[in-house]
Length: 163
Image: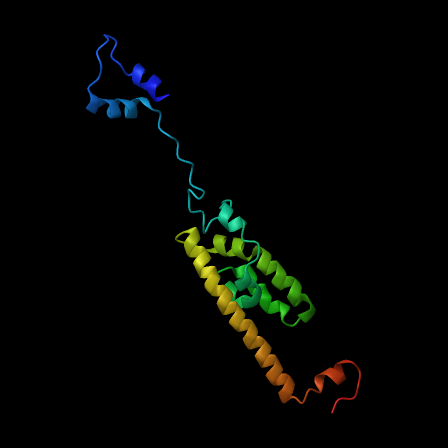
């Protein structure tokens, strides 16, 4: 192919191009290779525009699952504040938290303007750690109050006579 290209660059009069002009002529004759389009062309955060594929592929937002309403307040995802209503309705809590985990990335992306997808992912990773710590704190407080009350809650809850 190089020979074909070289021969097509020859002047019509039969003269040859000087050696130093050949690379320039080849560069001008070759079509430019098209670059693949960037995956994320426009920052759509803070809008109702379609999600970038990178955000749509985040299947489970750990920060939303463990952080609950604290995560929602921090990300300005106001729908997540419904988490406060789930506390009195304890049986609904796991269902609501799974919904928050499934839709949390979408809610957070649309709730505010992010610098980039990388910035969003970095912040959500931090929220995963914070959410995990909040979850452990909730378990610790629950155990503390369970022990402090003399663990009489369980017999009373199942119909026994607690002490």
